[in-house]
Length: 321
Image 1 (cartoon, rainbow, N blue to C red):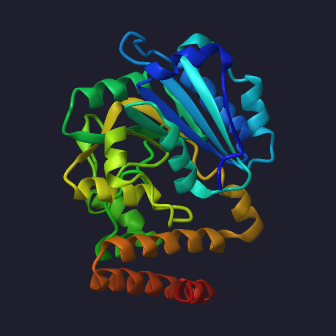
Image 2 (tube, rainbow, N blue to C red; image 1 turned 180 degrees about the vertical axis):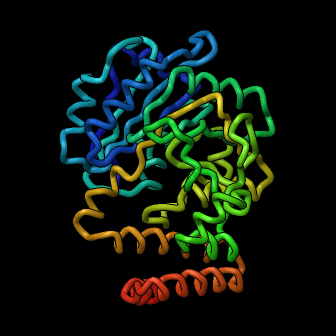
Image 3 (cartoon, rainbow, N blue to C red; image 1 turned 135 degrees about the vertical axis):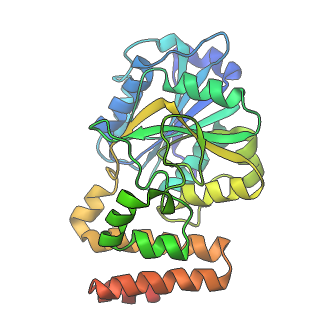
């Protein structure tokens, strides 16, 4: 479904042709978080305007909490209004993470695309540092900042995990084995364990990543077959498959609060719904990208974990998916 309408700030419309960085923020009923995210971009805005121009594209996925009215009213504009153009795309219903972000990518004018969740808080200088890094490393297709929890600790899980495999599935989806592995053998689950310097990783978190527009055009953006979860894993897998590098740049930092859009669904339908959505997308990822034997092994391991955890109804739903 096409967006209902787009809104572009009148004061900044003359700058659109000069944009080089497009920040795409997808939102669904996260009004206050979205406002905080937008203000963090402005308060931490240290972009060299002679080198970079920035546009913010907000894709609202059918919110009913006043999010789009807040954006249109400009309540979040706190400073540097003349330096940033913003556009609002209004969808009449929730089209999902992949399709919503693809809408933003389609209309983006920047050479660099920043995918940013509405439940993030951009720390000072993060966008400038990411743009500068990727522009000085031609062999790097996409990067992400270091994601932090709201207490300042590093959000290692699930941001920097290895691609799914029979081994990681065996270790990760058992609570005891997961704790043990993270404590003593973190490299079995994490593709990055040194968070002090830029490091190549398997996958980048969809909560905050900067990608070259030409790379998105080449690999096709997010796969809209994924209803929720693993869209970023799939995109990272496709980018790496064609030979490009993905890196995390720890000097750039973004706080990620996490799960804010899905919380109402969990409260209404329970954790079983969350687990189903997660495993369904994991299976989709495997079926799309892996040989059948590997996919089957991962499914068997997960079913065994669920059976041992007495989640028999969830097993039945996943078998019938």
